[in-house]
Image 1 (tube, rainbow, N blue to C red):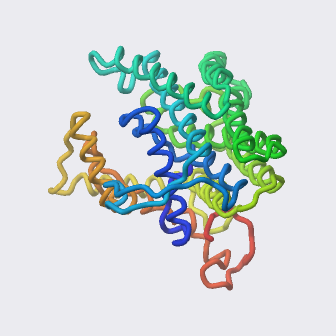
Image 2: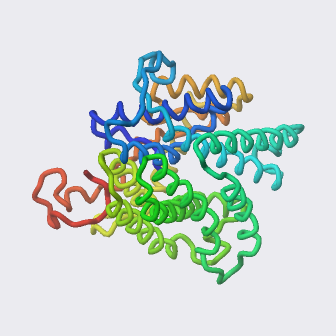
Length: 382
């Protein structure tokens, strides 16, 4: 949900965002090993940012050496409780996803001989998460229980089941993670506001993920909460916008020294994610299905190109290809590139980041004289 977008990140904030990202990555390396860096999660950066927002200039940082993933440049990175809390969240999420694949027998666990290895890896990641959580005074057991309860909630889900019953375990886990950010930031009075913000963030992330996978899950017969409960993507729209409003209101009520990065990640990035999946209220808005069809047409045209040859790669070859794509910024900026493992045509994540902002002229964000200048359409044009 909080994937970076160069076009909507001010130049002066890009180093700070990278500082949190690299801080999380290095924390995973130091506390869980090199391979744990593969679990680095964009959304977990919100936790590191929340801790920093309460500490202001007193937040911990250090200078890190050159890294291939940032073009062999040095970087000032966040350290301390914030990155450790983010690392705990990243490891727990990765462990839960692997465990789901093992129990369902799909994904990476569907490959011959991979199920046992995936199970051991999931257990190891959870153990590391517990150890890091204990080092910052976080009781991880309720979080593990909430993650385990997700599967039970999904099993009990049927037509007519409130979607909030399915998102409840995710909301509970993220609420506790957000609340602990108040403790690490030295502002326990913010715990209530952060807990509310965390629950809203968890609901938002869950629904956005379900909406993004809706068509693909339907095509392959996979379980999807929006389909299982019968509300569909359109039915989730009010809940998503409500969660976004709750998130913003809760953060505004918290006592923060520096709101710059929380505004970037938990307001601007979050609003962009919502408008990209669910659209805006502007008259010139294009429905997500229409934008999705345009992207499919571009991919079909690219597949028919004589220079395109889809080919699958093994794990290590794909990992090397992923590193090259990341270092050369093709993952975010290229119009088309071949997926590192699948070899299929992919589109840079930021190539269409302004698709949702076709209402900018309407809102007046580009030329200042739009027909509804000042409207709060949530299109993240700013």
